[in-house]
Image (cartoon, rainbow, N blue to C red):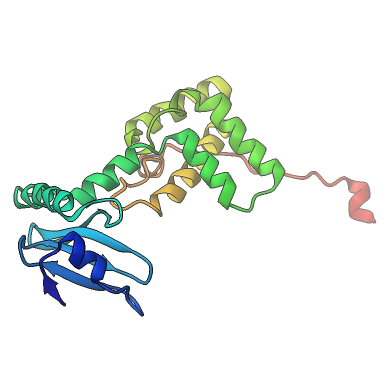
Length: 213
């Protein structure tokens, strides 16, 4: 892993990598470096947080001067020394921006569903989960799910309440699969508390005439 003082001139003279990526360490500030790929040069800061190595992207070398990137790296490394994980904080911020409304849009874009099924999901959000539309998914708690399920059951029927929560569970699982450190699905409370409503299976009546045919 090469080491050199990262200046505007030295960064410009570094050749792009022929394959993969090459990391260059700054000799002036330990933890500050440059990641060079086939078509890009990006500054980074690397340090320890709770005995784990964390590497944080600062920005492209064609946008940030080395002196500016070094100052940003110094701040990031100081935060790491205090136990803050910048990458975890970025993931948390990203998770907080995923509302139910946005999650449903992504879910319907990627999942291959029939138009009939899509309309059911949209109806669920529009009619029964309207108060949750702008709320980040990771802020919807188990107790909120339990109460919403009971309220829908009383107002719109037990089967409807079960279907609404099945839809919400699918949307939540879809988002959780793409987010690190996402809370467990709050719909689990319905199984753990045995709160799902019992649904009668549909029975098809066969007439005596049909039996003789």
